Image (tube, rainbow, N blue to C red; front, side):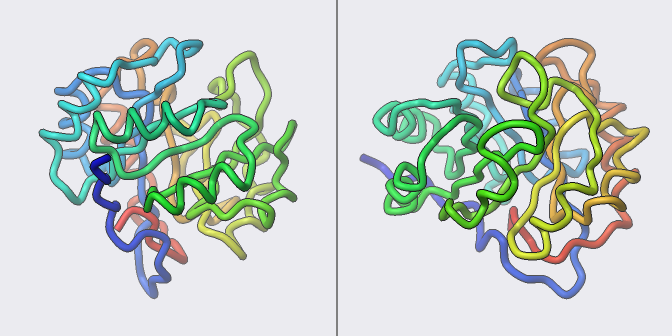
Length: 231
């Protein structure tokens, strides 16, 4: 099986480094390109049939092909089998995965052995909770509220400062209800290394509003991070 190229060093310590932006839920090649040109350092494609942003591997592979190599492409999964995760990684060329379900530490260790950059989602209001971070051998943690019908953020704002302790010990990506209007406030509260935004920059599920993407990136451009996640 062909191994995907790692997204740079990832999660390295940095003395001066801006908070990075990951735009998630991309479903169109041209919008992924526009997000990268606007300054996003990572894009996410959802491979979960229950999501309105679910995308097929052909579109995801084309997104990876046309984006510059320094832009990290992250596949988002929910309780998927190891075999299917690796099948999609192989077909798309994605080098990173984001796990939004009840995946075990052993599952993550398997992915680590395949040299996959693993982001594990933790939640403030449900399991797996923020306190469980030490159990998981992940490259970084995405932290959000965990309320709502979908495994993701469900566009719900929350007390972002609750995620701050994770960032003191682990690479932290903040998510949940982020928009151009509140992203700076959220970053001040949680001091993350990166933020993950989907519905907050959309005109509809999976359709990104480039003006909102640009506004959001500008809103956090002055904030500094402890680490570089997407190198």
